[in-house]
Image (cartoon, rainbow, N blue to C red; front, top):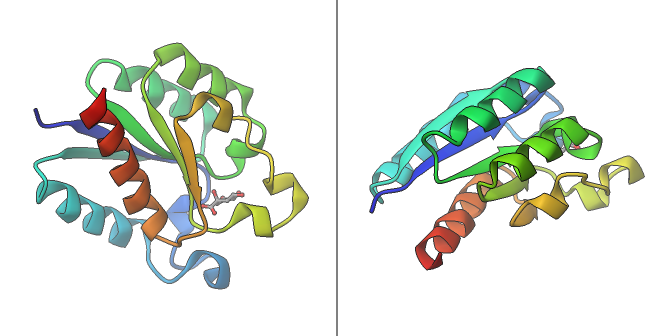
Length: 147
Ligand code: DQA
């Protein structure tokens, strides 16, 4: 069975490639999504992606995913650290979610060490630059293959 996955990106990730390059790298979000798309297509996986800077739009995207997706790879940006609304949406839809971060949030400011989303996610991948998305997708696909 071919899986359908949502790659969901939160606030400021539309600025990738121009934003704090020493932390987040040179690749734009479009670069990363194109590479991921090719990677997924080669495996017969259908990827859809969505980015928003608004918490409500991200909550809506998680709700909508319930009707078509098998799971999500989520970089919630700063919302990771305080959005109870996103946490409740993830718990509410019951889809498997892998939380990803480009930077190693544990090597940064203390307020980035806490994720309010992690307890309702399958797991967390952080610190591997744009490869965090690929590792997150792999982890999700392995989980889906076994469940
Ligand atoms: C981030 C880490 C967050 O702390 C930060 O607010 C971001 C990006 C990452 O991918 O490393 O916006 O999620």
